[in-house]
Length: 399
Image 1 (cartoon, helix red, strand yellow):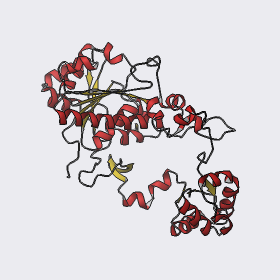
Image 2 (spheres, one colour; image 1 turned 60 degrees about the vertical axis):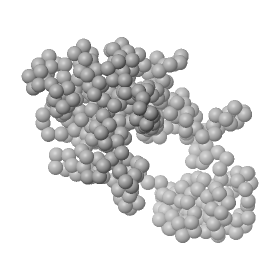
Image 3 (cartoon, helix red, strand yellow; image 1 turned 90 degrees about the vertical axis):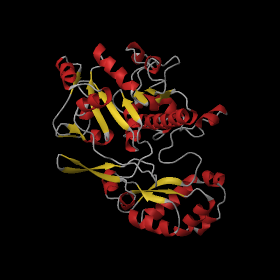
Image 4 (cartoon, one colour; image 1 turned 180 degrees about the vertical axis):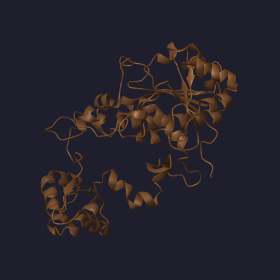
């Protein structure tokens, strides 16, 4: 097996659902040893959406490469165990409501007293400070408050959402980036750990491109359906076989090549994006007249030959068979009780130290005994006593 960039980094994951756990998933894919601490009932995502044999298919992907340890954080003994595990860790990730970890005696200051090098990553809806810090914040709310929903959908309909939790995923990526930067600074400078404060709303705001500076000058971007305001042509067009293709030809050379491909030399000389924006409706209709007479495959083939950016709108079934994704290794196979399951790989691609999935998310508490033996040198008798008192739990059946 090739080495990975985060081999040897120890991560302790607390919290549930998606934003914090997604950050830990990324770190684990690239080599970190991730211990996921779950409550006795388990992370709710274990039973969300499509469930097979009692476990969510989502869980198999999100909890890959993680070791599951069940500890009841409502118990003093449980919190003491977490404090001991944090003392042996490089990174702690938590996504409880601000103040919860401090109430449990597990805040950054509490844990750094024993482990000054600990990088402590916190993910919440609105951040650890400010007038809204106390508010609960799910991805849907963050996407609304952070401005994303204001530009999603059609102007004559209610603001829409993508049917995935973008707010959580973006926050998780920002948290993972912050963690890697903090580890680099700690190790390069020989210093201590630091606290990373990630807000779902701020993760949304950070990807809004020019929206805020434009608003500062009185221009507020709004919902624009299938287009991007002020960039033409870049739209979704119908095909003869009832599908949709996206064509983005908003640079000068791409636009000229597109007009030649659709046999509209009368429009080819239209120069400059402002001029195209002024005639957006005419241009989109000219392109749609051409796409309606061809299948999606024909359109993509013609425009590929013309070096014009274009592609079909694919659903998840299409992605399973996408030759580019397969060639790039973006579809990985894992085995669940003797059955194969396809899960997505995790970007980016590193040619020297690539990431990989070593095992899919497994049973609740499958690694409790293993981790307590390894990290805290606890005896079987001590572990059995904690199990008997309900402080911890384990699952010895196959993952």
